Length: 270
Figure 1: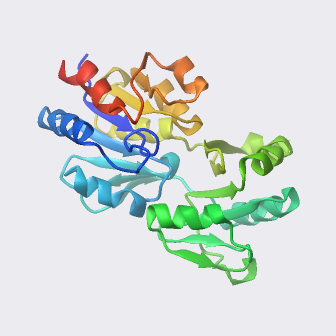
Figure 2 (figure 1 turned 60 degrees about the vertical axis):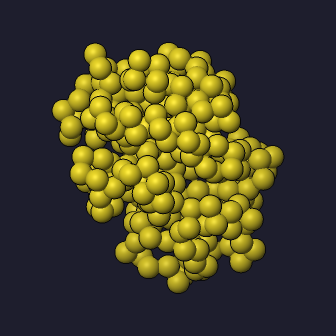
């Protein structure tokens, strides 16, 4: 069955190490669009961190969509309007903010428009996230936070060694009741239990009346596992972690070698 939707992770997949889309990848995506394929950027980033790439790929058009915050929000690419969302509550924020303090790691929370931290010693990784995506960074003590806020995701962030030590101490209550996964060695992402990239892609595919066999997913990190498992064709990048390569039907080239273009040419354009 022909592939009609390609879910593409961004960092480490669509983007090369300089956070650029190479000409070969851009051309392959353009040719897939010409064939009527839905190109769905599917990322842990917030919408603001996706928009410049939607514009660069000419995806801000009718019939195109994107998925942000690891599947929590599904957007129309034309205007960013959410067509599906599953978020965390303010009580979830309070629980994990306190837990992060107990575990000795930095913490941040994202709503649809801003990145919040209550850490007076703001983490270098929080600053990196704001710089990379363009999302406004706001220091707010817990007491200053608007209790009406909901959050697509919250994150524990720290140096890999510190974060990995904290992950080993996560209580069973947290791991049982939430989706918790790493998107980078220094990012632990926490979402509603029913949220992951696979669920985001499934919701969108069903709205478009597409079967799993008509979906291809391409990724490289732990947060991509669910969408590769859902998709009829799961593609791991050459630079992917071992667990992603283990479940993929195909391992393409790295993000330094136009891996996304190679996969699209093989499965869509051939």
